Image (tube, rainbow, N blue to C red; front, side):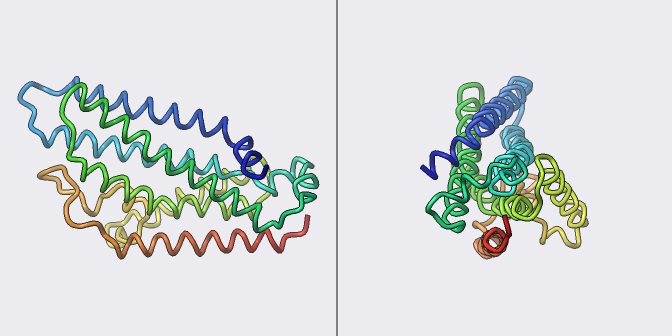
Length: 238
């Protein structure tokens, strides 16, 4: 029942996000490849996919932020939290189900748009190696967990239908501005999910092995924020 309830709370936003993001990035890839000149080199196509991935990152963060909004605080603001709290389950389990459903949806919003991009690219022109697609996907799926966790934490601390997403978006924009300087770009989750530090301008490919240490660091930060969010809900008075 908890899984079904979590799905019902988010399915409309998820489906709209999935169709919208997939359709938009597919169109961008199609348009870029149709606009390619006959003598365009492979780096043009690679750059097209990398640029579209950057767009996907922005859309993904926006979609995940909206998906993870809600939960007990939103229900409290709407006056219906008593029903959920009356269920014979702990708040920790309620949060765990909500988080796992959200993670599943978030990862789907990474994989499906990239699969569509590769399919459209394969039908209309040239595509990057599968290893490049995998590189981009891993960066977004791992580093993006930080944005997922920020949205979850805000929704666990702030009530209101619109206040929580506004604060969450504001936090993420502030984070982008604060880490936009080249001297601190290595600490930017935005730069990480886009792959800016690994993109070679000459080949238009991400170069080097997968950055396992930064991946582990971003995942650890996300886990810490998620733990704080769950603890906040456990101690909150309803």
